[in-house]
Length: 325
Ligand code: DON
Image (cartoon, rainbow, N blue to C red; front, side, top):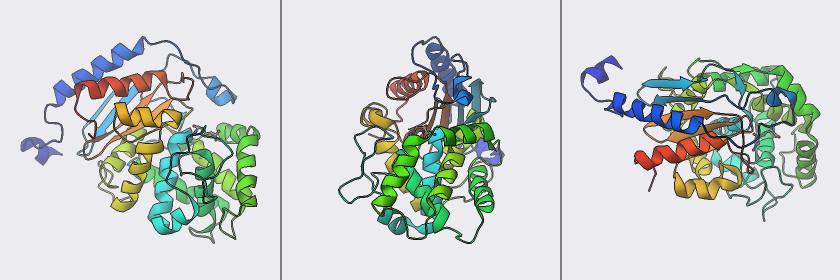
């Protein structure tokens, strides 16, 4: 970092100017009202609608955070690209995509629907992510016990976050499992259609899915995860090659087309960057070869995306030319 600084070779050379704009977007979006905090489990319903935090981490390790950036929240669906990345990294994309497709579903994230090959549409909707967790459960280190498998998977999350905060909310995990009729239905429906590998244990796969949704982060740690994806799988603050570059390419391609629920097409059009949102109110945004961004504000719009987070992303690309096209 220091030698790059001395050579003026940062990926964002005018850093102070850049963060003054980030600050400006932050404050302009803070006043937004509207949207509803997720209320299907008490652990999410308890969050104040006023929370608002943004963190950025560049691929050369420059950091900036503003607002509620050290409060712990669970990743929810923002974990889906990470579990997909682990499966790709361990199994390769041919094996993974024998079981899960690459098309947007055009349906709600939790719809009970398979594609024309009888596969879940993609790894970023619930069905696809439950399936990917099934692959992690049955094909990756199949001899591990479920507790060892949890540690193994969480270790990947931690390495992506460069050792910054990645915890686990047991309360959320238990609530998710108790309020998961739809996810259980998806699991049974996929098992009926022979979507899982033969030796896959459905209950253990669903548990792993709920556990991944219950991984806890802060905007700071999630911005480092996003930056690892922006940096071809190398964590910018540790230099650790966590994922192979081709795994990262696949993850970003699907985040671009499927990461923002039924707003994915509009987001790809307006913002033009890979992102994943979750019911926690976070958005993990990747600006490839530049930086990772995490925004967090619990109130969600009718499609499930954070109201403030969306507006922030849209404002940012109005000023900076990050849109891929
Ligand atoms: O499966 C669920 O209902 C949640 N735990 C995940 C929710 C989420 O963020 C929505 N996802 N696409």
